[in-house]
Amino acid sequence: MTSKLTIDTDDLKNALIATSLAVGTYTLVTALKRRCDSKHYKLVGHVSDIMHFPVKGVRGNHLNNAVLTNRGMISDGFYDRSFVVFHEESREMCNSKLPYSFCLVKIQVKFCDSTGTCVVLSAPGCLDLKIDLKTEAEHFQLNFPVDIYGSNAENLFDTGDKSADWITKFINHTDDNGEIVKFRIARFDSQKSQRNAKSSLQNQSEKKLSDDLNYDVTLGDGGSLLLYTNASLNKLNSDLTKSGSMAIDNNNFRANIIVESVGNIPFEEDNWSEVKIGNFGQICKSQVKNSEKFEKSVSLKNVMPCGRCNLPGIDTETGKQRKDGQPTIWLKENRTLGPDSHCFGSFFAMSKSDAGKIIEVGIGDPVYAKVQI
Image (cartoon, rainbow, N blue to C red; front, side, top):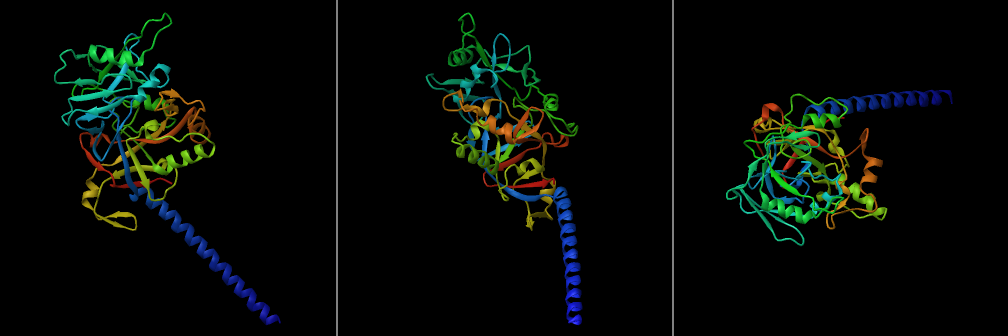
């Protein structure tokens, strides 16, 4: 009896030792894997949608492919957020904090051709507006900046009285005296206009932003590229529909790149410190390996999460604020990442050393990331 008990005790000790070794090994391997993942790129998904928004605040266009630059996405010769609507008297950009701006989400923009010289704006109840940069002699450079969320856009060009009359009639906003308020449309000229968004982004971030990144952008809110995953949008919409609210789409969140992720984990893009997009060399166990093309390719750095205003809560069909307060309520409850900052998606930007380089992206392209744990 004593001998059997001793054997059982020894077996138990050996089992405990083996278990401890296994746990220790697993912990070490996991720690090394996390350390490796934060230093090396791994396949995280593929591009499922690309959207380009020629006019700030209006609807975007779905694309099959596009070119990314340090200033943002280019399609048919136009940068993303090339045009902005502003108040003629106050010179204030029309944004979603101003109720009379809500209707802008009903405007659709199309390109006349691929030369980057002509766009057509369409809106319910209005004749189409054609803005042709080649033939409009009345375009002129503004002698004042237009403020874009705390950073000035300098040397923009007014698109003329015809477009001003069109947008004024469409918005149809009156002041306290019953007078029609006048609005105008300005455009960003890639050769003469300038805007650096670092100061406005820094005001929204608790951490110091990197001095090595390029913050020269067009008329978007912040970084040159806005990205999120389908898993994040699906999580939000699942919760909204379960509570009886209407789902939303990317015309509300207005990202340029949407990723179908391998892990299908909501908001995993928060931890992607850098991304590269495109087909590169050999893949081994989800790690990029021995690819000179990959090493020389341009990476995009995660600047910060994108803080959200009222725009996601505007019904893009009616141009009116949703009565249920969604998705703002959900974002405040689930995605508050800083003081007064409810976020969805992340801004990405190129390094200063990569300014002037381009990234060609297309639907289905693999997306690689350095994952920060």
